[in-house]
Length: 281
Ligand SMILES: [Zn+2]
Image (cartoon, rainbow, N blue to C red; front, side):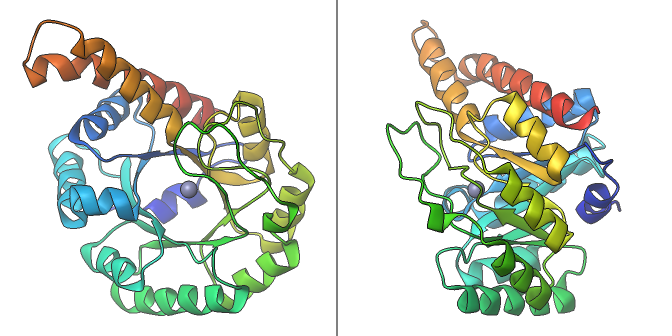
């Protein structure tokens, strides 16, 4: 079985993998269809809210089903995105998730290190192949279309804190804050590339870019060149989902399996676009 760890560590210097959040079967189907076509790895992300809605065990079973049924071994993976609750992380580990993001970014550094370390210890005993991602620095916003947002300098990741965190926890991946936010804003946030470069030089592990919706191709490409290996795009896909759904609901039919396919198609096209952009260097 090819692990996500092997995929991430075998990426070339300017390659990255798309992380795509899901909370419905239609969104999952769009991702599956995309991967069947591109044969490029894709990480499905489910946040605590998405897991609560979908059921964290069921979504794992659905991904496993497609992995087997459509021969997608080594191509589709599941991440327990932004896990704040310890029990939720343990559950994801026990169920065999491929990755867990322990999000202690709202805690102070010591507390963040403590909870992340605890999960790493548990991982080493229970699910060795699972990648653990940590987060240092705070990312404002939620995965919605937002009018305004405050980006404070003190929320950005401090390079020395990032190094201390990585050295003490031994995380596999690190999410950082360089001016990126969750959600789409009316303007493109200004990214602190120098900070990212410095952090990468210090921590030497793959970085994860959250909040890439609305950043634009050039900014994302630059991040990939700096060592970001996983790119989270969520709100852009949610927006497509809603706009396309609204359009389809205007039609006469009341049959779900006739309403959903154009939505799945629209999502699939965008997934393929980003997959190719990030991976085909
Ligand atoms: Zn995120």
